[in-house]
Image 1: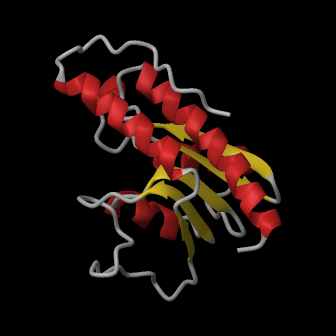
Image 2: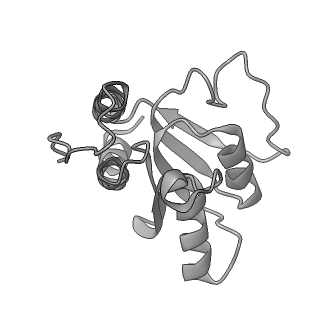
Length: 165
C-alpha cells in the first residue's frame, strides 16, 4: 500500500473511531463507519441497535443511508467505507448493493465477519477492494473496554478514557 493511501486511510479511520467512541458512550457496541469519495465524507454512522431497538441499525447501514441521502442517489460508486470492525453479512450485502468500491476495516470479527478465507461470500461479479488492519489497536481497545464494562454488569457505561487522535 502506498504511503499516501495509508495516511488517507488512517485519517478516515480516525473519523470512524470517533463515531465508535460515540456509540460506546451511548452504551452501544462501539462500531463506527464513514463513507468517503475523493477525500470528502459523504456519510457517517455508529451502532444504534439498542437505542433504536433495531437489529439493522448498524454503523455501516447508517453511514450508507446518510451518504445516499446527501447524494440523492442510492449508488455509492467510487466510494470507500471505513469501518472499525469487519462488516457482518447484512452490512456486506448493503455495501455490495450500494456499489461501494472499497472496504477498509480495523479489526476482524471471528464470529460474524464476512471476509475470512474460509467464508464464502458472493460479490455479484463486482470488484471490491478490501483493506484490513487499519488502526486496529484502537478499534480493539475500544471493543475490549466495552465488553469489560458489560461483563462487569455496569450497565451505565462510563465515558471512555481512550483517546482517538
